[in-house]
Image 1 (spheres, one colour):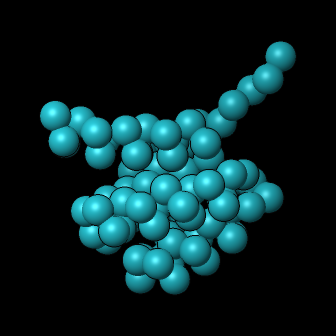
Image 2 (cartoon, rainbow, N blue to C red):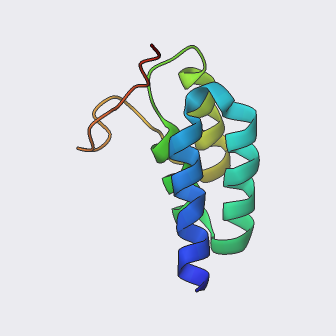
Length: 84
């Protein structure tokens, strides 16, 4: 059960995206306190997508976890929301 609870952190981060950097920072801080830098890094990775606040999000990630996110950081496809 606990593992499922923590996987929700990454799911929520993915839905929020980089535009909600302050909420993501709080989520990652909570993840860091509960499970350590691995989960906090996954939270930042899940939300890392192009946008106005991507740079801020990446700076917060580096500050909190020591992980530097960069373009091509992993092989996951980047999705963006298209509003009608």
